[in-house]
Image (cartoon, rainbow, N blue to C red; front, top):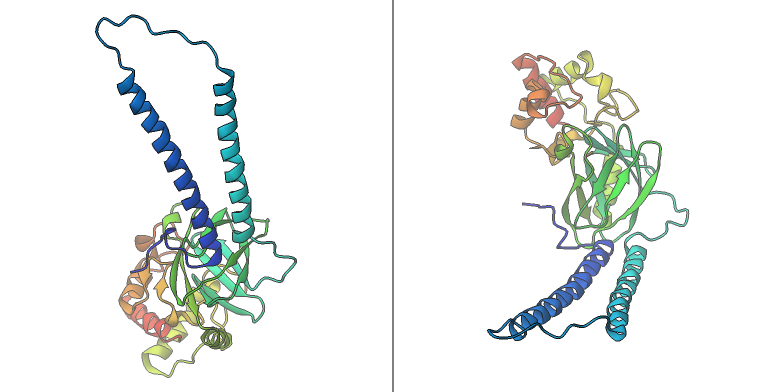
Length: 311
Ligand code: CUA
């Protein structure tokens, strides 16, 4: 099972943030122990005893006052420099570099484009292991926030305002990401995955994405393919070699069958789950922008067979 965890950093950016967290935690724990220790000592050592009068009254102590002003100031200066150091490591300057990846937030899915090659996908990012990718972030509707806890900082996707973040993974694997800014009904089901693989495998994946969709061999697959174009599916979902909008209205399905999940992480991508989705997307993920098409069961089956064949 893959989980969202900020405690297992697997990129230099995430490691910098984690180190800052641990450093501040240790400093604060030491202060907490010191203050609590002194307090407990004073409570016991100077507790009221029977027959004891008023203690001696003190007013002001310049040395003490300077100490308890200077100590927190010094501490904050130290934390300030740790933070500046972390910011430089977790979010280095882009120096006008062209982005490697475009991620566009939509209610409630992620459009992913590789501007260098023209590859397009959705809800799954592929990365070459150990290479720092510059991600350009944009939104198609409201403010979203992209966050891969194991891979680094989070960053807002703001309509009309381009933001950037670095994405990098030290080890091959599948990393879970989420939208970290409340963006409406299905905010919690706006998940995505980053799949980090060796550079050669990543290059092969990218080349494959540029291929048009697999042609249906015949039978049920061909019936599903025909339905996809005849019904309104194609008005929102593009399939390269078949048609559809160029704008990201809904996820591009050219290589849908290869994806691990569907509906932005809601379901594992299996024929049974896809059929549930096609029968009534509003039941599965209330509020999403795909209407219930009232498809008869034979159409649900044909479309499922066709879509799962798109590898
Ligand atoms: Cu998108 Cu929350």
